[in-house]
Image (cartoon, rainbow, N blue to C red; front, side):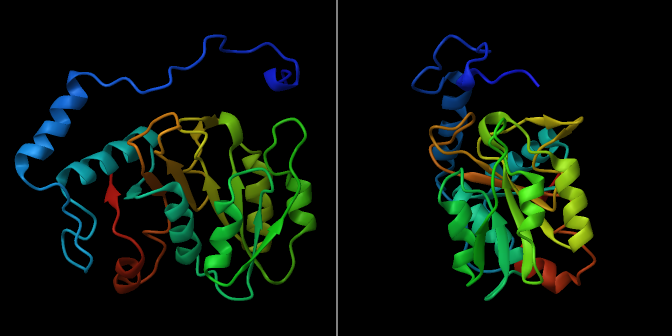
Length: 239
């Protein structure tokens, strides 16, 4: 593996990223289309066709799913909310344990706590700063229900090893992709490898909308549950 720039390797990029995003005529036209509609938000907090937002949100979800080559996508107000949603969708509750990373934003550890579960810190790989598969397995016991891994600084976690561990112990995999949109692991975009993936659209992320997040999944929307259970958990757009 090449030496990382932050440990003395050659930087891939030498020019500093601009402090603000590029806003052109396409973005202005899209905003004015919403303003001219007279409807700034089409979210309704009850189960009906507008529960998952209006046409612009649904179009965004569909295009995100197509770009990431996943089946389902759902917009949320932040990556943090996305992590909370995923913990709940994975049926994690009081007394359960979730393997998490110590090298990430605090939401990764807080998400299990929201449901009364216990975050258990595994160690990170000294080269990638992603979770070390050996440390993950060393921290698994009969109470472990999921692994919440983080793809740090655009670098994918060793998914083959972790997926094998999850299969062996019957665990769910939640991918935090806040720092890694469009990162690829062995030909597949991160976020669509585990059970569910979460992306950030916060103002300091690669792609941002001021605030926001996206959840993607291949299976949690279509995992053999009855339709009522699916509706209670997800309202996803499909690609």
